[in-house]
Structures are given as structure tokens and as C-alpha cells.
Amino acid sequence: MHDRTLYEFAVVRLVPRVEREEFVNVGVLLYCRKQRYADLLYVLDEQRCGLLARDIDFDQIRAHLESMKQVCLGTKAGGALAQLDQTERFRWLTAKRSTLIQCSAVHPGLCVDAKETHQELFEKFVL
Image 1 (tube, rainbow, N blue to C red):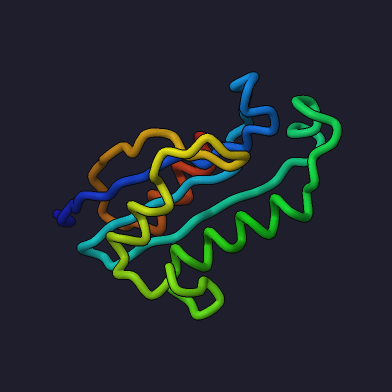
Image 2: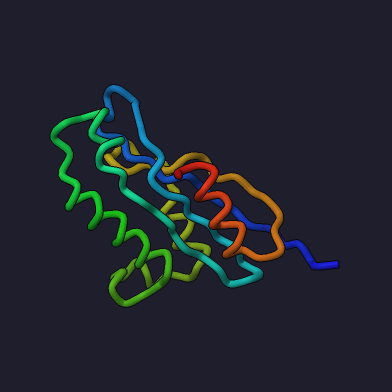
């Protein structure tokens, strides 16, 4: 039997008009300490997102999501925040915000393979 280990995830949302509280799920952040896994999978469906607002700057949104991914991965491109340990990076990325990009509450689960589970959650909540 495979050992299952704890992971945490949050759904990443694009909220083009914060005052209207409408959103489109665009990604999933997943963190698994035991497997040393932390990553952001995302996709920006311009047609779908454009239904909520016509004036979205998709280049800006892509740049923001890519920055979040680099922080999550801990790369130099992620800047000073990417130098924090994995747990601190995940907590910072999933902190409550009232901005264009927001995260759902953090949810726990058990997995055998964090990367595989991440893909499954991405397909369930975003695609």
C-alpha cells in the first residue's frame, strides 16, 4: 500500500470587477510539505474571462500569474518572496486579498503523488 500524505490547495480566481464579486477559476496552487512539492497550474481562457469584463488586460494577468508561479516554485525570478521557505511562500500566496487575483480558502487532502493530485484538481476546478 502506498503512503498517503497531507497536501493543501487553493483555487486561484480572476476577479475582474472586485465590487461585483464575480470570478473565473484560472488556476490551482498545491503544497505538499512531505513531498517538497509546491506549484501553480493555471490557464487563462480569454473568451470565458471576457464575459465578466471587456477591458481585461490579459498580458498583465498572465504576468501576475507567472510571478505567482515563480514565487511558488522558489525561483530567482520570483524575487525576495521566492526566497522564503515553501510553507511561508504558500501561506503568502494564499492570503486573503481583495485584488484582481484571489485565492479560495485553503483546503486539505491526502495524496500518494502530489503532482498527479495537482493535475486532477486543476482539471476538476479549472478546465
